[in-house]
Image (cartoon, rainbow, N blue to C red; front, side, top):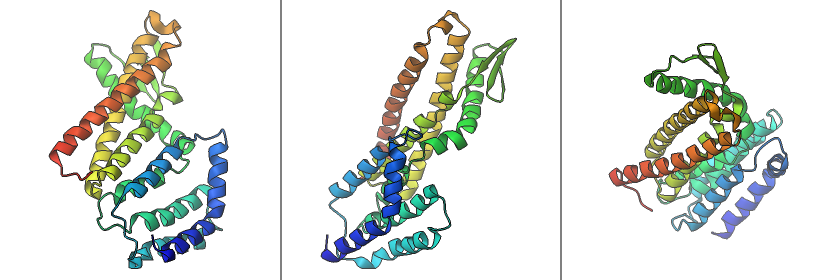
Length: 263
């Protein structure tokens, strides 16, 4: 990296220091999860291992400069999380849009945005819709097995039996991990943006299906003698997550075999 770019990077970090300070405090706060750091570390490793970063073509820094102006102009108006979005956009475009090849840019930018502390927000805004969508898929599975189950909001209704789909079963954490896998693979294999979006969409659909399978398994547990074994609930979640991760890896192998990727 040239001396000029080093100076620009340092100045940019100074400008976003309030966001960095808030970010660290948010991760240390028990109200959110520190898991997003994994995405940030992955993006950092991908950038440093990438031998194709340009170091002498500053004309591509205009997008980062534009994002910095947006960050500065909206800083007094936005809440901390949205300030972080603009700051991450500025930093992300600085490090990712200076590549000789456009491949991998979407994956890297996606990882940087995924590093935002969004876990609590995902549960708040996406928790209920994910439970409803996965619940409907689970109902289809149960009906295919001959059980006249219906879904009322987030309640399974089977005759006089009502089973609540609680918040931990929303699949929000599994969704985050699926997006992380899709974006990390896109960054490592330098997929184009269309391929990255396509892969991410497939991973999201597979996650909803996997979560529906977990709900179906838990339904059978709640309506059978297994309902007293509380330790089975997290065990089922872990097993479904591991199987889902293997399926996602298999999907990427098929995807890679049919699409040109450059590791």
